[in-house]
Image (tube, one colour):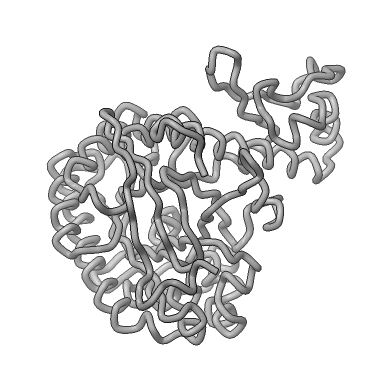
Length: 387
């Protein structure tokens, strides 16, 4: 098994080719396996990619290779069922029966979204649970303790995501808090990451902590944030605080400029994006990792991502009456198990009838669509078929 070759190492990243556009083809080796980049990570918020079970996740995508890495949410798992319970059961990989790589976010964005239920101080954030209103406190140290207990291959520093729009002064102050919390996160993580029982099961391989660049929609602050975090020497870097309501061209500019100041030999991750054409564009710019809830969220609302013969991506609303007798596949260009077996008429029937299978099939198709998009980008970057 691949992890048997790791000795006191949790991450290696090798770039095999870089295109003129900045996009690069690489391989990210983690304790639970190798991830081929650029990669899209399905989101399993509460240790579950909604409506799709893990065995299917391992088979979705071109060639049946499945998702190589998924994301889980620290905030939600902390509240329910609790990180200490998950630790007692052997960590999140064993808990949810997922033996491939996984990333946990810090909980910072979820706390940010509870704007009416939180209070931010230099020490951390006090907030009320969206489940029952109970009071909780997240500090950088506590976020690290939760993520260490969960045991995913990659953990994220605790950060503050500033609202949009926000003034330069407000963004600067929030960024300074993020930098202070990043330093505290790193110190606590490095001092405590070995204190998990399953560490020995991975032959000494460790979790990895990524920094998160903030700075809102201000180029000068993005530059300062990237440089400050690079000085802290993380094994990978995320670009956070985007796709929160700003115009798409602003998102693209912030990503492009931030990439200029991040190390070229380390993985670069844009958090929470986006539509299929967006992730394709960002991958060609040099982003290595992306995640988004859109594939399954759209599927649960009856929206299917499709591509016409000219390659233009759109969303099909399968609820529309025009599909009631349509015997064609959702996407004639798609080779997923949904499009090769089921008709638009059947998918519409399932959704209109409220059958749970409809939500599952829609989500499977959308996830395949995203994974196939990334495979095509990797193939274009390498000039040959992907492994």
